[in-house]
Amino acid sequence: MEWQLVIDCREPSRLVGFWAEALRYRPQPPPEGYATWRDWYLSVGAPSPSSSAGTRRARIDAEVARLVKLGARVLGAMDDPESNYHSVQLADPEDNEFCVG
Image (cartoon, rainbow, N blue to C red; front, side, top):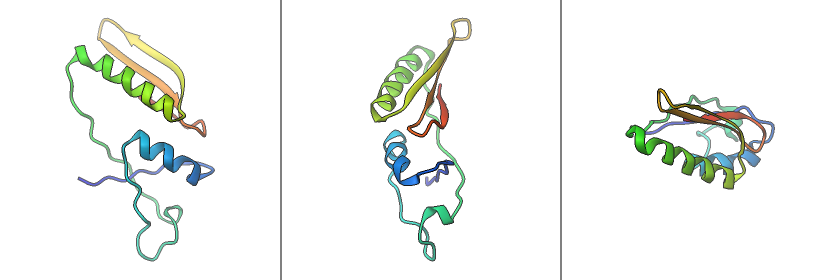
């Protein structure tokens, strides 16, 4: 499967390393006829692995720790013990917000 990602940012060269590591993504050269990816807009699509509720929290916490080491900042968390829902809101190095949950 192949997927592509577009993130609105001021300095693409600054964020490409963060997001490539965060998503375990290998940046590809721009399509033929384009000098940069900035010239070409792509859409997002990423698989979400299924997991049992008991291991989900540990996986989320481990992933958040990994993203923080890459330069993300934790903005907040949401816990709902009744539904066993846990998510963490983060910001990338340019303060674009995203969630892991």
